[in-house]
Length: 442
Ligand code: FCB
Image 1: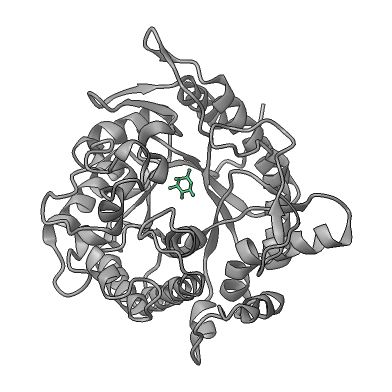
Image 2: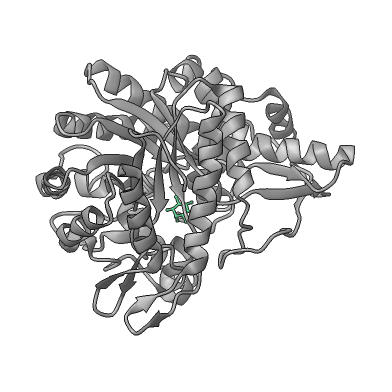
């Protein structure tokens, strides 16, 4: 049996656009994901988050499910367009009220709230003004964050500024596969810089309020393994690491972008628009780092500039996302983060798996998902035993939900959602998690 430290924080995670629905209710403004998902051809099957899991109305039931499983912390995100439908200006009391009711419900069930301020649903009006590639967006984010801190600081003691700025910038503005669907590499690098700047500005605002809570950021970190021992492959893996991991870790924890990557970007005129003092703001001390881990990548040398890298096929079995199941990658990642960026406390803010689920006589026997979770928990525990200050773990996801460009096709939940009638059913993985959490108390 895996035995974690007593005070370890076990949780589950969701994100506003993926679960809430109710996109035009109570004064919510349009987000870039509303616009993107309604654009033909962008999301599988033309799915949108219009209804999603209807969490907006059904959160009391969902909180009860969490309590039943034994989950102690809920990582959710706040939809900026619910709070500021116009991006800035006047706050919408009904939007604040929704999260206030959610906080009350969590408190009544002894579940710690862990809100993320930005999980990709930028108000469309701000995108129309230039979005994340435009510097002003960082200051709008600071004002939004400050407002939310003020409103909820008496009830929230752990905050996350951003979820996965790599995805928000690269998938949204570089590769065009996420909202707002732009394909402009220099714009993506500018977006990444402004996301980081906005993170630092929010941290400053938070500290200014003399809040007693903790604040951190969540990064998607993918260990990059060279395809061979060949010097070219190793160099390519190093660049891939620079692009996906160090590009965010170094400015946040060291106050500098990685020098090798600045060189690579300068070659293609994609260096970020850094202004005086930005890196000092971005590197404001944090209380923890959130790590989202799903898989590793295997890379070799490739021809295409600027990164000259090529993704190689996985070695081990994959999930339905085609992501290789590689728990040792999590162990090594946690060790490396501790060695290179420590002693910051770490949380796994997302980890989980997508599989083809079938409902048989009211049950979902998702053995593979359970296996995935169990093996990753074991990897995390190994890191703790090596002295890594890992303090919590949030399973992605509590519910099957709107999996971005894949729509409802891809299920990550430990709780099955029937999108026709919104019925929730605990999958075997949730029952396993419940048993596991019960044992941790014993
Ligand atoms: C992460 C996202 C999360 C979810 C998982 C599968 O990149 O943060 O919203 O989509 O992947």
